[in-house]
Image (tube, rainbow, N blue to C red):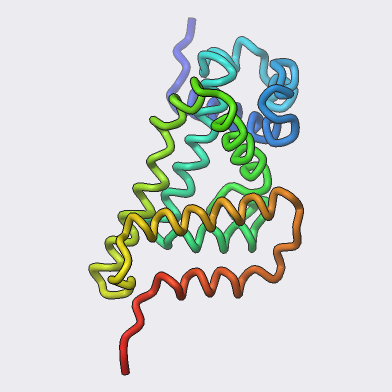
Length: 197
């Protein structure tokens, strides 16, 4: 039997994640049946579950992949930029952050966190990445004198994460988003250090 290259395995894994993202966003976790996952990915159940132990492992890997992509943007440009990218590119065509399908996955994560203790436990091991990237970005901004110094970095991190969650809910409900740039300007301004004079 010929050996499969690691590039081929990575490409196959990416194919599964991308197809599954669309399936979970469209049908939710329960509605993303194996048959629908096969259709969305163009692969057999054997091929899908060769890479992922079960549907929950696939869903967690997908959510983790999205969080990792966002953490990269946060590390370079901040969490407010992630929000700006969601507004300017809601379908994720520019590739910096996941788009509309990510919103569906993110909402499904939120729902499962409320209703499934086992999922909550598994997710807790993976969810720290975006928080850590945000916290580190804010610390760098504080060291460079750009971040307000009268509020703890952990509080600012929680504040920005709550704004992100609100934006996600707003977009997922289909509310208009073309007037939200000034809101994000206000959020950005609220964490900035203001110098006298």
